[in-house]
Length: 239
Image 1: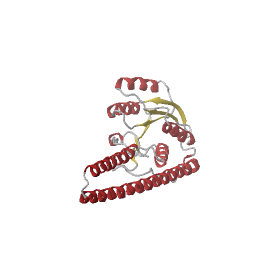
Image 2: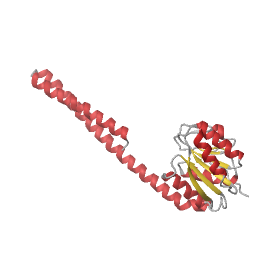
Image 3: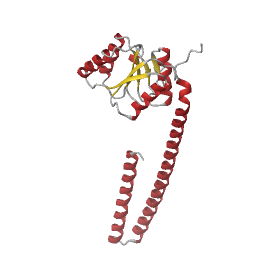
Image 4: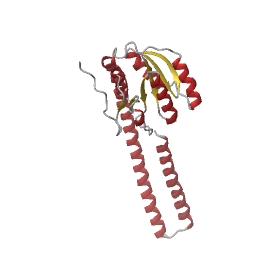
């Protein structure tokens, strides 16, 4: 269950418990019948609200479990069919993955998708947090001397100015660039759309498909769900 929701439930329970104790203490001190009746009425109301809260919590838990099962089913289905949709589309391409964390499950999954498309994932590189670190990374990439090099950059919380410097440098080196960001990212990447393929749903199977199709077609521009996206997915050339 989400931490914020747990805290919310715990807070409400603490409030109800404190009120209940106060009423009990008050009923011991004051024996007035009208006051006791009022206290009983409040206790009944609190009990009803607590029961409603319990019912609501159980419903949320059930809905969350169903959503998790649905997501797992969709992920399993995508793993079964993606090879047919992306096979050999990046055959012979040499790719370097750049991300804040190179050992995350997401980066490993992106590497697996690229390999399924026929690409060679040459390296996964830690994305630097400063311009000084960026210079070292870019020199390392330049020294690789790759044929038809592709940079796939995972962007979420990086400094946008550092991202821009990296994109500008890689474009000068004639690298093809794909920038991925998660669905709920707040960073705007529209300014990079002229020089790179931007996918703002990079943490979904549609984002993975857009990455492969877009790189195969040599596209730039924004794809995904955002207001600046030109389309959800790149359109494949049917010829």
